[in-house]
Image (tube, rainbow, N blue to C red; front, side):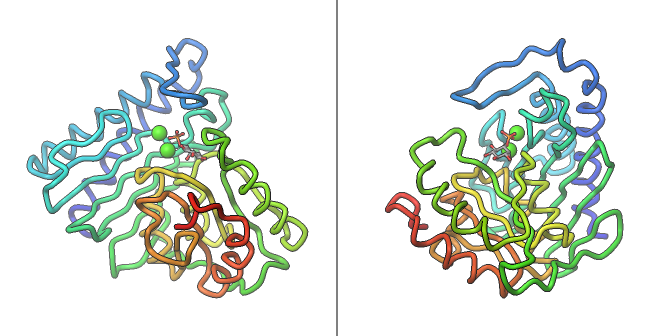
Length: 266
Ligand code: IPD
Ligand code: CA
Ligand code: CA
């Protein structure tokens, strides 16, 4: 295993410990609202502190982009992209679907990825060119080619109601043709599940870099494809993401594109 990935795993497990220590005490936590429907707890902040302290100790010059504390030294060739707790709303409600997400980019290329589910203790990892794994088992996306029979994951644009009509158009286009659509509440874990072959496809509007960076590398290393809504590569900037098997993504795009407003073109 790549030594840098090992450090990222250590950081993700430490953050997972913080989360688990508080999982039975969520009613005692202070919950702040960052913006509409965007919550943060002291657990998000504590978990992020643990991650950054481990990474910083080992790689003091590396840049950091973390959800709760923002960007530091972002111009360094190496950039860690961190979501200490993806699925905070689930966590607050005791709904056991949330994860720690950590990725490393070098000169803009994703190199290492960890998504850790502290409840199931599933550790999803990937290094560029070395494949993706869950608890050391090799991951592979499914062989799904068409919508009939496909299980899709998604996220609702609950913080961006201006995209709700476009989103509902996409949802309606998919629903009658697929085996089912799941909204589990942690984009990082949804993407890891796709890499693991538990979902065939995924789409969501307006995600942040820290929601998707690790999941993107997991999917690529598991043989899948990720694009923006135009079929291009702008998803890290736009946050509009379509992911799935190589054959399914073009089919998904045909259902998504007719509903895209100008603001969702990429
Ligand atoms: C959220 C989750 C959710 C997605 C939201 C994200 P957070 O992350 O990934 O599935 O629909 O857009 O913001 O806020 O819980 O870290
Ligand atoms: Ca997130
Ligand atoms: Ca988060």
